[in-house]
Figure 1: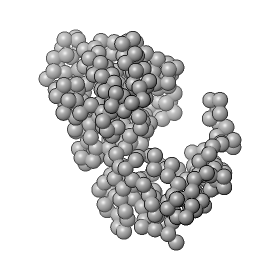
Figure 2 (figure 1 turned 180 degrees about the vertical axis):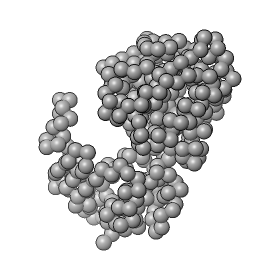
Figure 3 (figure 1 turned 135 degrees about the horizontal axis):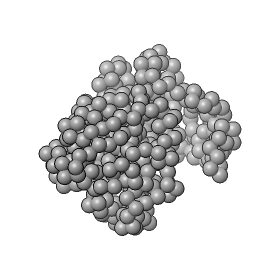
Figure 4 (figure 1 turned 90 degrees about the vertical axis):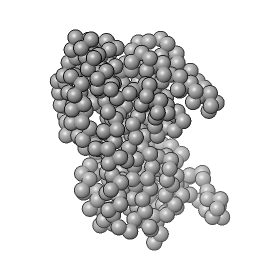
Amino acid sequence: LTGNVDRLADKAAGAGPFRLTSVTEGESASFDRNPNYYRTDELNGGARLPYVDGLDARTVFDRSSQRVAFEAGQIHMLMTGSGAEARSLSDVIIARDPAFNYISLTMNARRGQFADPRVRRAISRAINRKQFAEIVYGGDAQPDGLVQWSLGSYALPANDLESTYQPFNVEQARALVQEAGGIRIKVMFPANVPILEHSAHLPIFLEQMKAAGIEVEQDPQDFGTWVSNYQSLNYDSSLALNQTYETPELPLKFHTTRGPFGDDSYIKGLGDAEIDAAVDRVSQEMELDARVKLTHDAQKLIYDKDPMMLPLVTPYNHLVYRKSVKNITAGIGTSSYLVSSFWLDT
């Protein structure tokens, strides 16, 4: 696509089980079975996959509307907002999987007070991640380190995070605020956004900063403005939504000199050559045990230098579907959408 995503609307190509047949931006997309798809089902006499004739995707942001559509049989699967909501639905199957995204505090180390490691450390010590997990998700989430817990062995152990690398300690945060001569930060955020329960995170974050004596100037923005300012680094700090990251590379690359995509967009790291080299080593290592160790080493190094991006918590997802939907694969996150052997029992 040579970088032009607009061409996806009518010139998308690939070798997957489905092919895009129509799209209405922000509303819907339709996919038909790819007649040239190469896979077959060895457990069913070599039957050609996929079994599903097509997929219709509809964008519905309102949670109550999503639920009404599911209960009316207009959609077959529903990602609920919580485990409690999933359990409140009758005659459904619930797949509980770790999510791979999160909300983070992103600090621009080239603006405001964020060049001072004491400021970044004070903010880190003021964050009580367990409170986000309990209040926002009813305990159906876990605190994140620099690499989120749902990435398994790549993440640092929870006990090490809690005791050593990012302990919640209001007294220490207050002492650092005093040592820095006071801390006042400006935080931009997308206003009234329900994605990832962002609106529920915001008041908790503000209260935690206040408890530590950190003054916060709020800068609410409409979603489009926020995205534009985030991409162009036009901010001091941001309570930021993050995409799905199923490998440790991107979470680590946020801390490198030129940012996650190497083009000075969204966020730039501390400009530390040692961090850059440590993250590069992770990307170059293919042997699993060595890769895990290098991922741990890179995180510890970043913590030693006081990180400028602080993920909060990653929840569990609760996907519900009717018993007529067969062979939904659970436990592999969004990779399940690439599995083509599900079908409807008619």
